[in-house]
Length: 247
Image 1 (cartoon, one colour):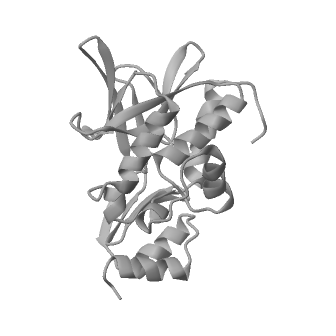
Image 2: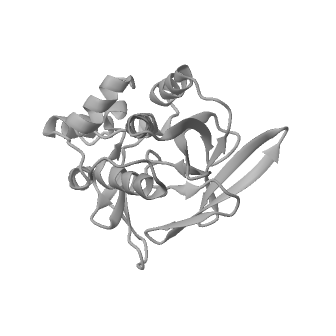
């Protein structure tokens, strides 16, 4: 994909290319040797090492690429599933052609292309319908991204400073109750099918077909993780087996 002038079509193609080639994964967080989220380390982790990442890596990398290409990007924080949770998910909004669009490259399974930041806007991704809803509360605007009617995350419009991302990352990697401290989570595309893999299950979504969900063992989880693009070694597998009490 050659460099082009900023446009909605170009933004959409870039978003799709990112989510179809870059893996969502928390294996380094889970095993306790995550390198951190400064830009150089993010580039090394996602582009050079193929170790995947979660929202802080994906959103930062995608934002940096867009800004280099001339897009106007704002970083946004959101609360996952409920407004009782902390602002721990990093996503982006991009202003283009007189409108603003949500880009969400680091949620694991979310929109595969931008969705207009407009009340009632929808986008279908491998058979799942994502919808944006707008809510005003105490002088602030909130955007609810839902999937098939269930809330994925709640985005606010407050400015995001660099240390906000660092704080969220530290909580998700250090809190013993964090899902990323307790479960393997890997997600990505194989062709036109989207896979979500944990240490105990796989969910496969394809457009026009029923969602497939089944239980698996850790060996198959690692094999599927490799299939979606994660570089994971036999030493990692051994460490994961120790983590989950399989050795």
